[in-house]
Amino acid sequence: MTVGALLNKYQKEAEYHTVALLLGELLHCPFLTLSLRRDEELSDSLLQNFYHNYARLRNNEPIQYITGKACFYGLEFSVSPEVLIPRPETEGLIELALQFIPENAKVLDIGTGSGAIAITLKTLRPDIELTATDISASALKIAKQNADFYNCLISFYQTDLYPTTEDSFDLIISNPPYISPSGYAKLDIRIKNYEPKLALLAEENGLIFYRRILKEAKSKLKPEGFIFLEHGDEQRHNIIRLAEISGLETILIKDDLAGYPRYLGFKKS
Image 1 (tube, rainbow, N blue to C red):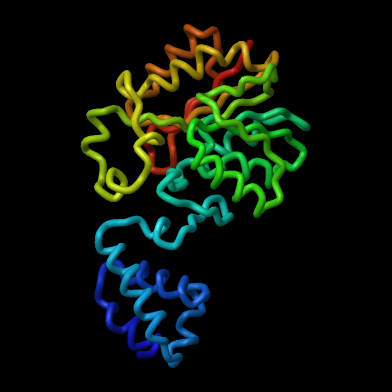
Image 2 (cartoon, one colour):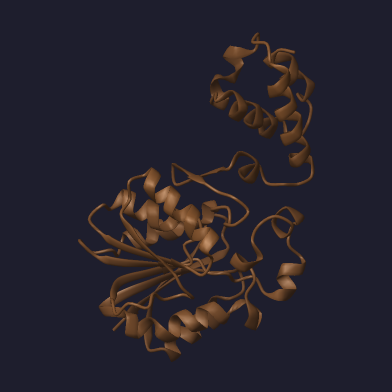
């Protein structure tokens, strides 16, 4: 069977674009140039791998876990079911934080997962000193692999939220777990069945990690330091209240590109 014949077989399917991406990955061929190889014969072993991966796709497994890759802010990251797939919404969090990071700043990424936030920031701002934490050893292994791939010097710590060092930071950034138990039950099966529960679920109606992060933030921030958080649709006012209780000043309230409440920024005054 040729490349063209296989693609024609799935031409009318809703996930045709995803099918083409699967095939392109096996051929080590970018999607946009796949059409140039339509007459190429596919080996039996490659077809077997394709049908195996297609079955995984039909079983609602995210293509990022099938290929082991996810794109974020123009970079490609290794991912596995041990880490959350980086979302486009989180790119907005990075864009906001970049406006407030001073030169040679010390920055902390809490709950780094694949390392997407930390590595992207370090790539864009090589001058900053970056620390990243995660409670999951498996997640940190992937984050370190991604950091090595991009030659990013980042200090990684396996810990619950803050590192045990005495460091203070110019800026803290985090996209913590924020799905409440009731919200988790309603998640799309592609998320609930495959992405790590540890990176999604949060008690106290999704607020427990915001409360804990903000409670310690003032002692971890340098004078005039900032903290930027991504959050769920209905959590904004409660998070602002938690920040005020912790003595932080709200400096930024912003929706994502789809118009949903998504980002908050606070300052140690």
